[in-house]
Length: 383
Image 1 (cartoon, rainbow, N blue to C red):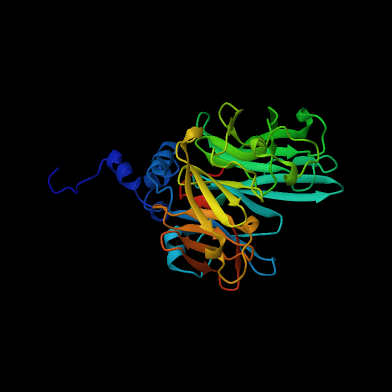
Image 2 (image 1 turned 90 degrees about the vertical axis):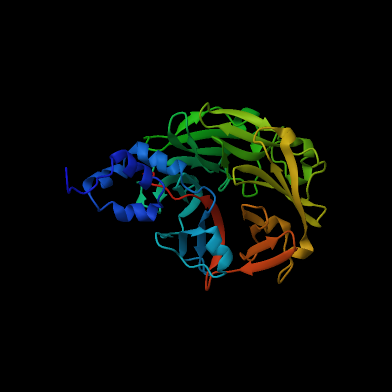
């Protein structure tokens, strides 16, 4: 019609909007009913997630020195590297002492709550999307008998099962004093939106103690574990051939065991730890109390693809005081591998530049760090 204003087709509008950041889309939801309904459409949510930047953000847990106030906030890695004083960003969440962050996947942050009384522990989870400011209700309670399972011995993991389009939380209940292998672990799974936790196959090894939450990668959750575990044994009696990475396929709910790098030929003085950064599995361990060693599995599941990513002498990490390996917690690695962020025993952020062997230290003003998780902004609804 002559003189009429041009109108964009809905398909073109969807295409344009799918490339925009979540914050902008949330503002656009008030433009018209069609746009508001589009932003809640499952197909559009998945399309937008596919096109979102996957490696630019973190979810930080920050506390006051007294430990009374705890805050969870999104933060871009770029702003973190530019600004050494981190303040809670828009969309942050105050947590009470019952909660901690288990993980982040596709924009959903999994919060785990825990209490214990009269030798009975209770765990539950809630899902939170900081970008759209929505949070789920509590999941059903997972009860743990603390006579058999020590407080803190339950290992959790959070991830996404693409085959069923389901977000899952896995709990490995550990009884280190059980005499039979079949009694040492129980594995419970909670699917987001379900009314109960359910049992799956027993864990094939015994998860190590040190910061060993399940790391999500390519539809699997991964734990460092000890096979042929003897009741009540400690780290001093473990041999190098007992260490293994147990990988749980969230779709099939079956396990696979991955060997550690061939170059790791003696048991480290402290328990190693694993991490997932930029879609790769990493292993971190001590070497003879002199070096912090980093390995990368370049092709997940292919044991021959383990590559030594770096070895950092502790002297380069000694910023103000002696740093002990067991309290060095890797947080993230920059896109080009030039920067490694770690947390030390004083809850200071250690920013290490391998090329120049340069170290920087960061703290929140009047606050300290305790944790960081990879995060992506999305429109995924937490229920």
